[in-house]
Image (cartoon, rainbow over all chains, first blue to last red; front, side, top):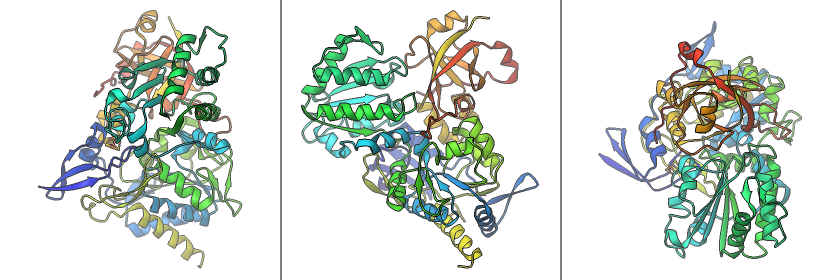
Length: 432
Length: 129
Ligand code: SF4
């Protein structure tokens, strides 16, 4: 048995880079340092793998050569009037960069999973920016941590132990040197380990953020209770926020998926800005997929915009609501789709899925999902961070090199190579 | 039949995260995902217990799910369903010009739905935490 050390976990936005993977006869035999999610991933990643490229013939997916699948994918995308692309958070920055080039070539729309997770956070941040820092700085310095509408013990299991309350930092060494505040509708597992749990009524984040701002500014709150939280409790928490030395507000999709959406984020930014008049306070969205931050970064440096980028006019346009793939599908406008490392047939609202199942879908993904059922062309890939290397961005924007641990099954290539083959094929078809 | 109004919130969980890794077509994923968590008082009000089938109706559609005892306390008037293929059938596609459908805070009506047991809807509600 051999050990591969300092492996980066390809699951959540924590991108923990301290895993030790045990390899026996070319197979993964064990995981050290991982949480339950990463262990489950490493020990099950090979289940329901797609082994061969497939194209749909007479309604059935049939195995075919990589060349034929690439040709078919190229034809479908090149001949479409308004192709869309979606996914991109579970693959490498190198693949994302190639995908953007491809969608620009065919004059389509490229979007990533932020549109259904932290898209509104990105919109909120567009308005005024946000004060932030690296997770390392939080680990070393933060003495007050808020998780707002986020339950990291379930969604990012090592976040508390690696980066926040349970981490041993340079200047904050133990749990009792840090205060943990959790704001949530449910008394979650994370809420149970909090020093202060604020149980908020569903959809009332905007109200509570406003009340906290009022209290932080030292103004009187008129209501006895806001969002189900007593005035005294709000004032007590406001005092805690003001009197900490280094505070951080982590927020989850609980804040972006409810009514208000980016307006909630706008207000959270305002609260943090107010707090900076008294103390040091930063904020960070709890990004889910391991490379969704990379998707936003690569989109931005290549097109100027973080998601929902439309090339149909020959230059990048960005107008979420109009150019977001969710809306385009619901309006029934797309006539082909390229899906990479994602399963929109499971995760989009029904109306969007209905349209997706009516148009030709090219799917590049290692495993069977509901999206495989509606795909016209399926090209399986090797898995980043397990079978191939590449770059991903941690939730704080730090780029990390993902290692290769074992060899991929025969014939499976990384996403980036497949995308390059499709792009080259499209360019060759167009004579150039 | 007794029914109540509730606010639906979807979310991630340990089981759901692990379920994805078991494979989305697997029985395990189905067993893990296909459930909702309600407050006990609300369950009493419509006469169901953990393990009963209930129907969730939104303005976009309806869905039958198994109820499970909440592992993380759910307040009255709230129903929690793990984020995934089942619940997306009844969420609202309206994005209010943001690209983001409303995945939390959706108004639903909940009523008992034992009559659907014969359709194989009794799977679900197994949690791994
Ligand atoms: S916390 Fe996230 S990145 Fe870290 S080991 Fe667990 S799943 Fe992987």
